[in-house]
Length: 424
Image 1 (tube, rainbow, N blue to C red):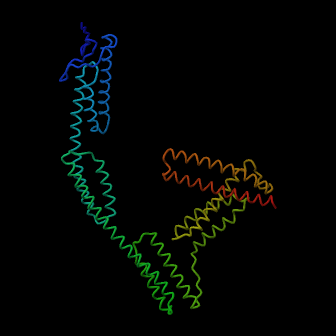
Image 2 (image 1 turned 120 degrees about the horizontal axis):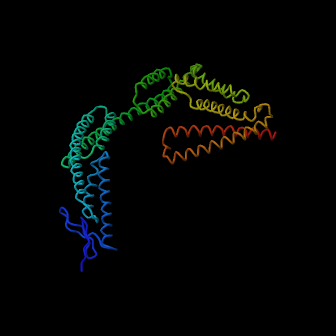
């Protein structure tokens, strides 16, 4: 004998739970009775609240999210989810809300597609203008920016999508074909210029072997003038060829001067002489431990002066610049070391040299290990934060490595001096 317990949205019968028909959805079995029929009805009524909260949450997300069109699929899926959801409650308001959301989103998508269509058509027109520019390099940058805008622009109606994409891609393909031809021609011109300059270098070497050096020197000077007219090579290649050409000229004029009894005195730029003098002075003062604070102040002043002078000189010998930088670094590190030691040993300079060295070695060893540990921690953190390729991070790491390296260099020098004194 069947027994029925019911509520507004469904009922229990023969140990089963049913959801009443509503809208176009027929009567449907949604579960079974575990304990009592009333408890079963209550359980499925509570389950309905889950569906209700999901719909409300989805509606809230659509309201708050910026890219609303992306939620259309979720709304359609939610409607299908409700159609088969096992729960007891009033599904009609929920489905109505979802229908309204779907209608709103479809209208929004349609409006966006119309706007996107206008944007993409305008982008195609812009791309055509840019692709026809004479300056291929500038056009390349502009087209890549425009392509980024194209990718960011949302979809259009399917009936226009393929035609638009084909038009845009055709413009890009045609441009990059022209770009490739441009660079092939440019590379050909560069190769021809390289051959021309290499020919000048070979010619100078041949003129050096000439029996008539007076006639040859006129031709060498003509080649020097012609060299200046050949421009547009990559800087590194230009520099390499120029070094070879200059070497060939130096060898030619060295022979010419030797045969003609001419004593050649190369002109020395007084500004270069000033840089050499500053470097030498600082290197000499490195051993003046007593006056290190004054030497550090001098090094700071020379750093400013070095920048002023080098800004006026075309080329600076790299080894000399490194010598100057090393001298400054050693002075600054030495001055810092002595300042730290002075807190505990104010009369350091009055102590025997062996005792001075032991104190300096102990303090420098401590500072070096401490800074290396701090650098390792900083690099590990930068690695975790994915900042190792960041320029400020790399700059800080390189600066710290240089400081540590200079401390280790001074430390090695202290130890060598101490060993020499102990073994004397």
